[in-house]
Length: 312
Image (cartoon, rainbow, N blue to C red; front, side, top):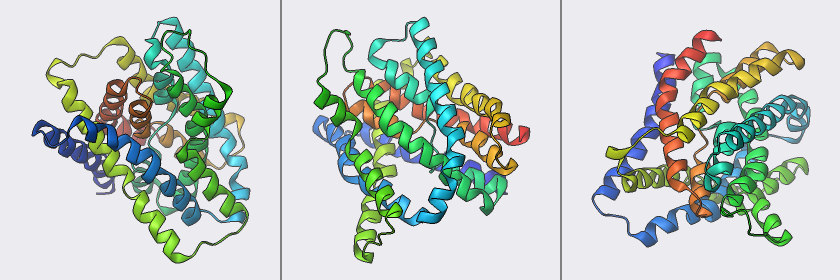
């Protein structure tokens, strides 16, 4: 029953994607509306979501106490991203999607899929470790991943980016929301209840809007002519196989509890973070590749997650 509950979280996400697909097929979304959705997620929904998540999940003492444990997921994501970059350059992944390719391989859906899967497998005692991995993953994605995806727009390799643009890409609205939540926790600042409620309500828009946009993107691509090209296949293997393998190989090097190690391996085996597709659309690089990575990795995880559960 718990196993089916964990898989239910995955199929629930796919159903929302299907709703977006059907509505786009019926012509509900104009071109302007399709451009508006990633802006709504990036500017309106994600910043308060990241801020409120930290305020509700951490306090100053447990955040400082768990910072050491974040070294393993940080290290694993750096290694996974680096390996993806080396492989991507070696096999000549399209320049317009290289940063997105690396971000998809190194970052997983640690909250919307991670929480139900880990609760089903390990129980409530796993939740602090789930959030710890989320902490490391969020910092890495909204710094390195965000910058890599934004750099894909310079596809010819000749465009020079000003320092101001680099800083603007790193300190994006979601990253500012994350830093705000982190600062409030470290300073022991409690926001008024109505502000927290407002942030939570806006943050709740993140998942449905992102999934609807992915469904719209899939409909625009005409899946009848979908082919698993080399870039897509390598990215899926990197996300679902390489990433948990890197964490498993690093575990002996870090003196962490056994449960923490198992949660980290499971977190690393999850589908692509949906915000990767949103950022690709926002920066106008290769949103079709991002949408396919999110959708296919989520679908395939219905197979890989049970395998990982059995191994753990």
